[in-house]
Structure formats: structure tokens, C-alpha cells
Length: 539
Image 1 (cartoon, helix red, strand yellow):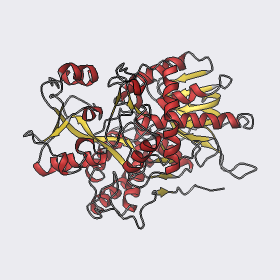
Image 2 (spheres, one colour):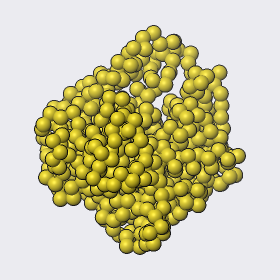
Image 3 (spheres, one colour):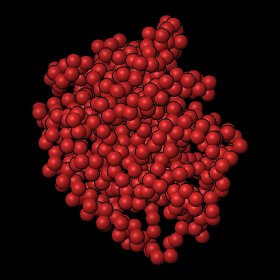
Image 4 (cartoon, one colour):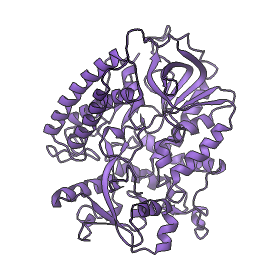
């Protein structure tokens, strides 16, 4: 029998977007935060670099806006960029008041006493950070506050299955979100969560690729659920590959922060030759899409398994002070970065597209919000500039909270929701189907829909994803749900969205590079790629 939970606000996801939204909501609201694994197992927790904001007297809002627009390859929504950048400083102040310990620099009076670093695409030092573990500091600080709030209930080890929506509202004929079905992974039972407001803060989808910097939870669950419910998605072809992940057989998904390049790290071929100046006058400080493409090009040109990032020319104490996490992690694998270069490869890192959301984080479905990496707001365009991601989480969490407060008195409780129906399913008989399809999907996405694409590669990927979708739909329809099956179902949905979006963009721009259309076409393509589900209704 299904267990029912009733709240005012249901937040699915426990990273910076979900936690900060919960903390910005009034304590009179009954809030549920749902985490797929432990509360802190999020992309936020593993973010190293920092948060970009105009905090130095020599910097300006206009400069941050201009840098973001430049990095976005002509596809950023300028009003969104302005909104986010203008609200950056006050959100950093909010974190400071909440106890986040950013790295200080008493010698820098113009930055308020905090150390600011510079990363790719930025024309100023504007990235505030906590050494090289900013995400961990932010996540754990927000988490401690959440756990001290009596109005917030946390549900760990619950994975969302699908959203529960009305087909049409009685008055405005508009679909409304009433809640979601969740699989309790500890009891193996499906539970029903109802709420007046539902927020998707589930992060991105980089686990659709074989190599990724993301933790295992980044399986595109929110994007897939919103799409199935009838929300539009946009710009899914723009998957950011982080240029520098540690290349070691035992180093799973370990990122080498962009701040290493910001503090003088040099990219080199195996023979020690630098190469970035051949690709961009900014060298190692070029935006991520340029750097990732350059590394991929050089690896393929010389047949190398990896290239190298070298910061050993900086003083050892400087390296250990600014990059303690990276220093220790590399040392664990026998690499002393104060004396030798770091072997690196690109890996899928960030989903620039997602569920379409407005400036209040509202989606196409009434009562449903999307905040953070899951959302397409127009901030990132064709390429996300370094350290704008956590900033987006904070700003749009605040925007969503304001909108929820504004509607609080007008939105009534949802109707009684139907329980999850398992009457026609059985226990799975061949779970090897799930694991095999999972591996096949991530391999062909890496091979055919990676950093460099072509019409032929995308067509191959489309044929394979269509076959996998049919198999997974059949499997899902006949057997009881499991964590692996639900994640695979969502990943194949997201893979299809990425492929379809990439096939429709017949040019190269930002993170989308195809050898069949190697140049940008500003005449017809300077607009987002929007996919519309069959169940979408504008009314």
C-alpha cells in the first residue's frame, strides 16, 4: 500500500539550488526535500572552483555580463544574464551570513578581504572560493541549516519516478503539478508525495556519457520527468565537457579545477610542449569549450591517452595552500603536482540546456519550478562560463522563493492522489538487460555524441537510442521498478533529447561542434533549440 506524504513545497534534489530554496522559504511552510542518495551526494558537493560574482572594486556588473555573453556564443538571453549577475553580490553576502567560510586574503582590500581567483572566460578575478572545495563548504553549511529547521523534512534514499499532474485545470484549462511518486530505496516501496508547489532541483545529466566528472546521481531524472509531463526543453545539444579530469585508472570522476589554469597551470603535450596558443590567444584561460576541443584535437592527432596540466613551476607552498584537495588526491595516486604535471582528459561535466524556466523559475506546468542545472533559463547559451553555475542555483532559488511566497495564499491543497499501481507487474527476471543497456547507452553517447560530432555519428546514435527506448519501455511496463531501471529510463530519454537537439542544429557553435557544419551560421541559427513534447499545451 502506498505511503502518502503531504507538504506545502516538495523540493526534489538536495544540492545548492534545492537547499538554498528551502532556506529562503518562510518557516510557516511545510517543506519536503527529497535526495536520491545521502543528502550531500550532489554535483554541488564536488564543485571545486567557486562562485563568480562582482566583488572587487575594479570589476563591474557590465564586465561580468559581457564575459558571460561572449562565452555563451551568441545564445545567452541578455535579460537573464543581467538578472543573475546583478543579484550575484547579495547572494554571496547571504552565504557569508549563513556561515560559509570562503578563503580570505587580507592583502586585497578591493575585494573585501576575500581571495578571488580568475577562470576561463573571465576578464577579472571574480571567483570567490573555499580553497579548492567550494561546493563541499557550501553544501555542508546549507545542509546544517536545513537540518536545524523544524519545518523542513528530509527524505534521503528516495528516487523520483514521475510527476503527478492534472490533465487540465477546471478554470484556466492549464495543467498543474500535484506531486510525485517516489521509490523509497530502503523499503523498496513506492510512496506518494503531494504538494501545493513542486520544485525540480535534480541537477544535470552527464552520466549519460561514459566519462564524466559528475557523481552517479547525475542521471537527468528531473529533465526526463518534466519532458514526460509535458514541459518543453531547450538547448540540450550543449553539453559542456570539462577540459581537465584526472586521468588514472583508479581515479573515478575526479575533476582538476579550472582555477589551476587560472593560477598559472599550463597545458602540455606528452613531450612538454605547450599548445593552447595555437587555438586561442587567451591560451589556457580560453573558455571551456575551446580548451576541451583543443585537448580532444591534440589527443586524436598524436594518438595520446591523455595530455598534461602542469603547475609545478609555482611554489610548492602556494600549490598546497590553494589546491589542498587536488594536491592530496593526486598524491594518493602517486602524483606530486608540486613536482610533476597532472595527466588529464576531458569529461562530460555540465548540461547547459534543460527544462525551460522563466525568471521566476516557473516551467510550462503550473505549480512546477525548475532551479539549477536542470533548468534552461538562457543564462549559459551555447557554453557556460566557469563558476556561473552555483551562482545560477542561488539566484533562481531566491527568485522561485519569492514567487512561491507571492502565490502562497492563493494555492490550495491538491486533491487526493491515486496510489502507485503495481498490480500488473512482476519481479524482474533478467536484470542483465538493464546493466547491458546502461553500458551500451553511455558508450555510444561518448563515441557518437561527444566533443566532435557528425551527421553520420548522430544518425547512428539515433538508431541505437530508438532501439534502447523500446526495450526499456517494455521492461518498465512489465517489471517492478528499481533504482537502476529508473535511472536508465531517464538517461535514455535525455540521450534522445540531446541527439535530436544536436541533429537539428546545422552549424557549430559553443559546445556543439560538427565536422559537417564546422562554422557558425548567424543568419538562421542564433536562437535556442526548443523541443516540444506531444503532451505540451500552451493553454
